[in-house]
Amino acid sequence: MSRKIILLFVLAVVACVSGFFVWRALYGENDQQVIERKMGEIFQMMGKTGSEGFVVQLEHARTIAKYFDEISEIRLPKFHLESKMSRDDIEKNLIKARNWTTSLELKMYEPEYHFQEGEPLRCRVNFTGMVDARTKSGGSFQEGYELEMDWVKKDGEWLVSGVGFTQILNK
Amino acid sequence: MWNARLKKIYFWLFKPEMGSRSYIVRVAVLAVLALVFFGFLCKPMILNGGSMEPNYHSGTLNFCWTPTYWFREPQRGDIAVLRYAGSRILLLKRILALPGDTVEFRDGYFYLNGEKQEEPYVKLKRAKWNLKPRRVSEGHYYVVGDNRSMPIYQHKFGEIRQERLEGALLL
Image 1 (cartoon, one colour):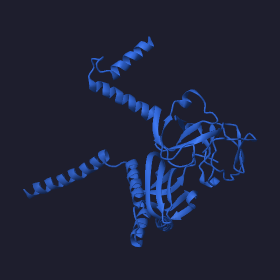
Image 2: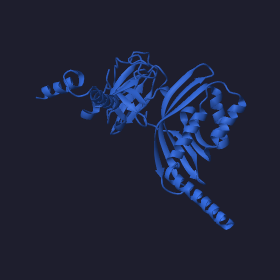
Image 3: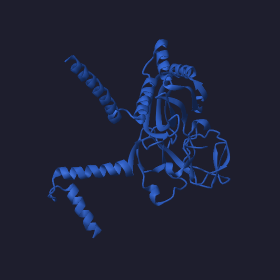
Image 4: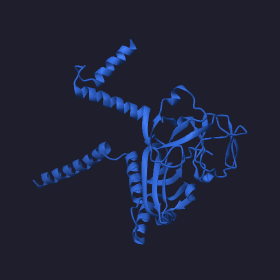
């Protein structure tokens, strides 16, 4: 009797585990959805609506920096950011940017995903970003940019490996 | 014959007493037509930013007429609507030069193929823009905003690929 129960229990566990994997394969997030979700999270976290204390600032910056690879290539010359940066550098620059503004809203429109086969798996996302910021000096800043965000899959996790402007107008 | 057919369609759509079709069908047809017209042919847009001041004001409504460049090539003087990634965020600029033209800025004045241009549409005081002569690449157009009062580095202009021209401004 007890053997039967154990067998049934084992079968139930096996069915649950395999069911989970089948469900995940059929309905779980694919790579594009993972990147899309992470981009949404980054953009949401980068925004701010009012003044915030240093601890909150640090926490936000640290969380966002975790989405980046150990070394990422930042190509944003308009904001005087054009170099390879570690997560610490990204954290420092995010704090600086948050300090400069009283409110900051970032929106992403119409992302296009371009996956590159190979090891590791990479993806470049082209999208239009709108920045709406109010600076501490009282100025406001609203502008659209075409951006590209590079992603790399390391140990099963998608990380940002680069961010830059796409130059569509060449002086 | 075509006139009579168009009249018939018009009456069917707009004069309920003429047709035997139900009101819902007419509304549905009108909705689809409006979607196609305003979604693909005549895109409404709210201007944002001052790069075309004082000729086109920020905050005003206008339309992008996409069929403009289906039947003719872009011309100098056209107010072109340019797109970033996707087609939700658009830029408004004036086409100043065609592929193969030589462009230059000297003390705020635009030179086309070595000749100084009068540009009556530039109504605000010109900042002293200077840009060395350059040739517009094949398949590209040179676009600049009408507002040249800001420093050159603050104004988005330059040559752009023809595929980026979404259409022309309607009003």
